[in-house]
Amino acid sequence: MADWQEITGGITAPRGYQAAGITAGLKPSGLPDLALIFSEVEAIAAGVFTTSQVKAACVEYCRQRLQAKQSARAILCNAGQANAATGTQGYLDTLESALAVGQALNIPSESILLASTGVIGQRIKMDALRSGIPKVVAALSETGSDAAAGAIITTDLVTKSIALETTISDRPVRIGGIAKGSGMIHPNMATMLAFVTCDAVVSPHLWQQMLARAADRSFNSITVDGDTSTNDSLIALANGQSRTPAIIEWGAEAEKLEAMLTAVCQHLAKAIARDGEGATCLIEVEVTGAHDELSARQIAKTIVGSSLVKSAIFGRDPNWGRIAAAAGRAGVAFEQENLQIKLGDFLMLENGQPLQFDRAAASAYLKKASVGAYLQQDTVLISVNVGNGYGVGKAWGCDLSYDYVKINAEYTT
Image (cartoon, rainbow, N blue to C red; front, side):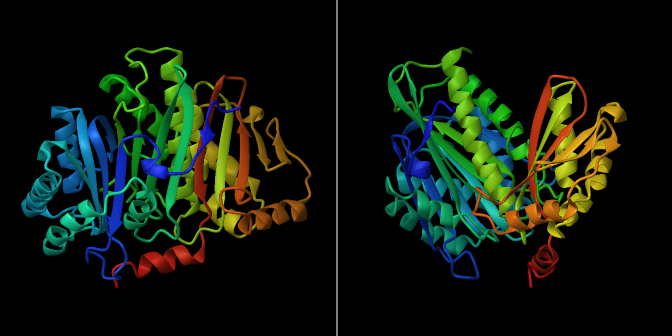
């Protein structure tokens, strides 16, 4: 059983946070497009970012800020323009954005972190941003999480939010998060964004380590289409307002905090994978028996990222051969005669040998997931065992439908 419970409130569930989301005129659609997350006190800050060589100005800015100062008070996110591949002027726009937020909040611009999402190659509409910043500051609220979650999305069909609570030193500690992402999703963070807030007291070094490991087990283990964005950012704040003793070294309390942080990140990551452009179901692949966790995750990510596997799931075709082929090309050594594959409860391959199974029933299982309740009964489970090792890893993705091509063929037109 998990040592925490789900609560309401999203990004503002932890103590000492406010958030807002407004329409500033950045999106052509006229939908909300500017979000702000604010900590009432200086918070420890950590980040994990895209590994793409083509990085948005906000990514370069945040990396520099966090190297110089591992704390922050606010995160501003604009949707509509990615401000990636926009040259020197794009970076100057980023600096101006931070300065404007700092002035509006009456705090140093060095305490502002930034994120952007939208069309690559387009600068932020600065006139709209300038006029929008005072409005989003004025809209800050302790109940503003939903508004912020709605203002960061682009092609997403649903907003993505979660909050969990545990007890540390007999006091409640909370972690909340919001995210956006639907397409251009593939492992290699270090166009998905995720923001996490926490009210625990934790050292900067530990918080960054926790976030990096949580990212590997969540956002770095999802794929929709094999494309890594220029803007991928995961930013986490911890402001200490729970008034618990400081967690400054590894131990039981640090383990509990990291486990809850990982659970928040995994929920948001699965929500992104499920909301993949045109997707009809979530795919979860669990690999066991590998030499170590990294090897298991590598096999799982290769399977869930296979276009052939994803297409077969969309076609409700229980084609286990595509799963075996993807596992075999993952770059991880294992003995073929140890391979086992299950689709849901259907055992299809055992000790490298094909088994008879009810194809109609297996296809019906895939069909049922496509109409199941969101993030509850809409998950296709693929279980793969490759040997007797202790390595276990999971990855998440979605099926590949006709609509994915339609959505992305018309993205800028």
